Image (tube, rainbow, N blue to C red; front, top):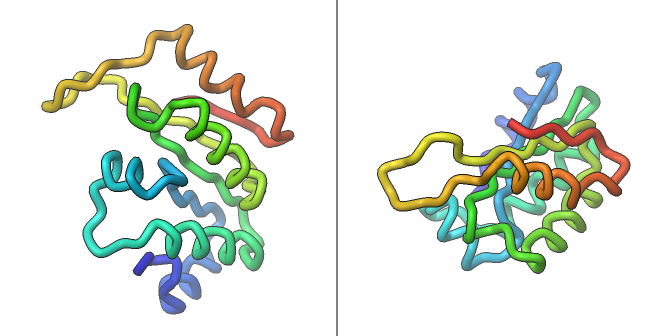
Length: 130
């Protein structure tokens, strides 16, 4: 299940000024790799965010965490762009890993971050990178 698929959670969030759900991949294999969810189905998460976006009246910011080499392939980005269009958030927040984690992961250069943002510029949604 997804928390947004829980009506008690959704009812509480309806009172918030800003809600920022996160989606890091539209592919199940990558979702498992990046998010390591336990008992959370990607399709349920995706549908819950779309459903919530249709009824929520406050500001909706959608967050994507990009992990270099995991969820930044052209296929991943195209699928994420289609999903962002479907959700139609007020803002898209793109995050990357800035500090070297315990795992061996590469960090994005400033230029690579700019290239990521540019992939989403044509969506007619404010895009911010953090």
